[in-house]
Image 1 (cartoon, rainbow, N blue to C red):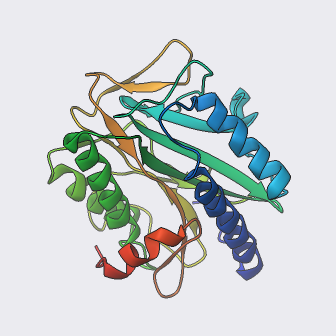
Image 2: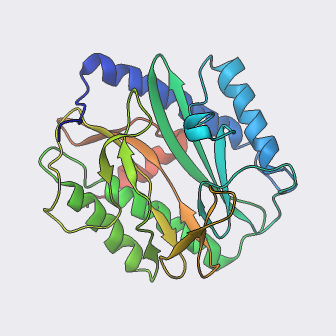
Amino acid sequence: MANLHIKNAEELALMRESGRLLASVFRYLDGQVSDGISTMAINDLVETFIVDELGARPASKGQYGYPYVLNTSLNNVVCHGMPSPTQILQSGDIVNVDITLEHQGFIADSSKMYLVGEVSPHARYLVEKTYQSLWAGIKAVRPGATLGDIGAAIQLSAERHGFSVVRDYCGHGIGREMHEEPQVLHVGEPGRGLVLREGMTFTIEPMINQGRAKVKTRKDGWTVVTADKKLSAQWEHTIAVTAAGYEVFTLREEEVPYTCLSTRG
């Protein structure tokens, strides 16, 4: 793949720092997302924190003409939800907050699901199993594995619980640019596709639907929703392929026990 950029040690160190900073944004946001806040208020808080506190740049703002610093995808919104001052979080909502950050020329990309107030058991189950699907994909990463191994692990994890995997959007290479090669599908066949090499960096970001996988885009040209109006969830991390397997650049502190308890594949 001609445009595949294998990062050297210096570049990986810079990406690691961007990822660390982005993880700190979510740590800050954990104390802000609650019943009664607008999604635009979340956007504005994150912009101030990234720029003023971290000395970094919100990489999504202005990318492809997008006017905000993050996406807030609520309930049946699959991805690319646009923040709004009139969209107020309420108890029972699930919302994905997707944030990108650029520091010293390198970009990190991550998203997290937030459960607002008292969330129904079926919504909580979807969020939990989507998170497990993300980690199933991450734990398939190692030199010599393939992109198909990642997609197959995610697909198996999601479908065994009766959920569907969105095919229309995928993970992507990342580094100096937001979107680099390769595309990282969240479905696949083991052993198929590009062979992973040490120094590759990309996102894994499965979008898992409660109902059918079919999606549609609203008239704003950005917001993608489930066609059957059922719930959707997504989690995302920026990953590097290492000699030993993988490194999650955007890992958040509270996730460490989970990764230690999880098994490969």
